[in-house]
Length: 553
Image (cartoon, rainbow, N blue to C red; front, side, top):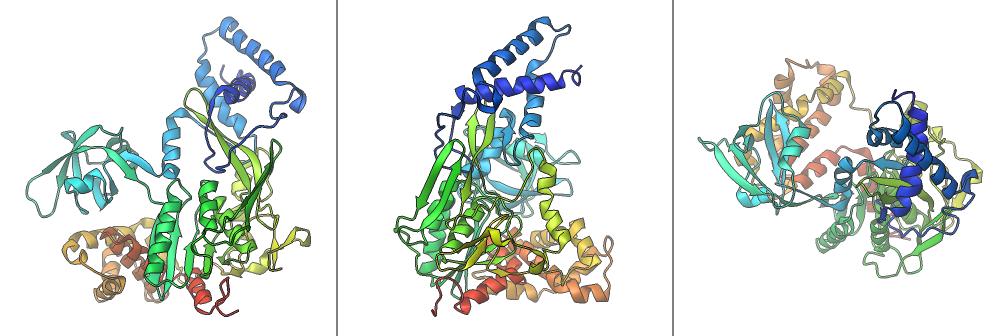
């Protein structure tokens, strides 16, 4: 029955949820655009698409009434509509998206910058929930929970064993602000079970996940452009400059985007007054230009921005604005190529529609949206894989840019539209350390589990380092690689040739995970980056005075 009614339900969903829901539902700022969207007179035009909104509404309301009143069997109309809406939206561009009411809060959490819970990072080891890190300022820190604690009971019920999963832990530990939960914790230094009662509170979600100083260069890694990212970013810039930073290396690799207005505020810190940052334009939205106001605090220091295949949306706006204004040198690989702006509309039942309403353009006039076909989402997402298969991961010459897509920066340098931001300096993917042994170690999770168990056994001596160099030197003397080979041997057997090629990278990963699991998040990234060719090239560009603005013009 459900399959027979499927085409009709799709049409019905269009009317009820798009024509009616959008017009009467609450609107909120886009999770991607941040610009107020004001529909022009043709937004719901009388003959748009060959049918007026009143005609469509009347016809589909009549169909809905027929289904409800005359169909031979009873129908779960609400369920059918919920099933049909995603199918409908998937026929649009690749970035329009329907979010059911049950998922909306979770979807918004990362960008909103907080959630309600007890404030721990955890991992499941041997069917037990292990506390990896206690989030500063959260209920767990105030109660005295420590890294290495095992959560074994929740509200006096056993909370370990084969039924434990990440989803179950998240649903159990998170909850409404002010609600309470009682945990039973095993701690290596305590003989008895420790019991804690928590009142859940707001837990910050950081998007600036690392900032540190290396050779007078400030490194900042940004995972997304959330509600609080600008303040986190600005604080990092100030802190690093006060510690002697003479340039900045901004890491946007893997950053899928976020709020446009946050991205604009961050770019504004680097550009002189009157510099165009971005503009947007759509069928129902007139062109809107955004310019720097000249109040940025970091207009003179050199900047390098790192991007890769998964840098998208706001990451590309940031990179494009800095590149087109000759304000930063872009290092890495071609970015994803998302140049569409979504507006989020909240519907009356608590669900939401993120609808593409415009395109954005970099200051030179580039639209970096890669080509797509309506309704072909899988093909669109597979484009990154096609790039890899085509050789782009390793060779810049495999990328062919048409002269018709050529634009110029403010200084006259050539830049290209048509699918992502091309870096000024291309750094191919590094596979020099990859062997079958390395792949088996990574894919089996044995590197992570070894690092966790080592950290767990040595928490006392690992918790008191005052600098990255001090901790790195200490760990290098611990012969971690040979201990790991022995630990991994039952699952993954090593050979001399593979260790010669992969050993340094494996040791680097082990040390990075030990640092993270000992509470040193910045040290984790500093260690993780130490063998990274893109990172090392970015540092070298600043040291050599080749970042924009040039140190030695």
